[in-house]
Image 1 (cartoon, rainbow, N blue to C red):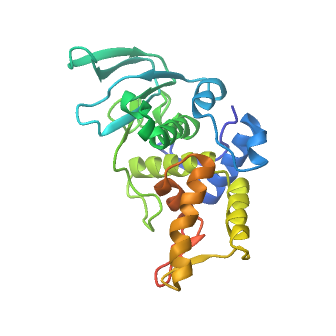
Image 2 (image 1 turned 90 degrees about the horizontal axis):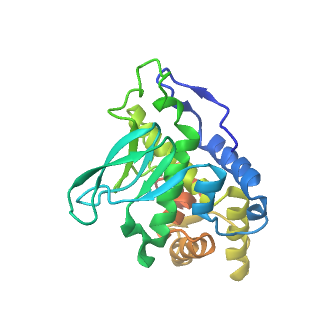
Length: 257
């Protein structure tokens, strides 16, 4: 596993730009499965989690509302899950480096969401172990309420031009961005981008919504094409393309790093 080399805040959250996260993602994929950088390809996320990161996977329901779909255990101990037979809260004994995934994500219709949730949790493991370490100067496990980190539905949209107000927001944005960068590495995303325009016999260029009917159509078709190449959701592909300024608005553009 290729560890991140960067500086950290006092609370042990990485100081790192999105550009640096993109570079790190390419290095990780090159270390884990370099063939995935030769052409747009689909990363085997379960293999990546279990064999490259050395984590364990558990499939358990994490909340009654199913707002929590994934969780990473940074320390050995007990975590509360929902018993599949009784429907009641039950303790689950986990070891450090366990990823818990809600079984609803195993349904075929949720394949893209499952893949992103796996990589979101894997990104936390790559980026945020120091924040949950017993050696964190703010106290074990860091500034957080417990030793686990749960991925909830409706997380912050990292594509927006916003400054993170808290360590928790920064952590979630970093994990979302790295997950997308691992699933859609920049070199092969550029290949897919070029292939898309080659199909329409055009030179690759920035797509500007509201500038023409052609660009408005491309703003819909390009994310669909990228999603099909990398087996991600259209929304994940769109956010990735927007974050890289491949798709922008005519009057409002976001170039944050």
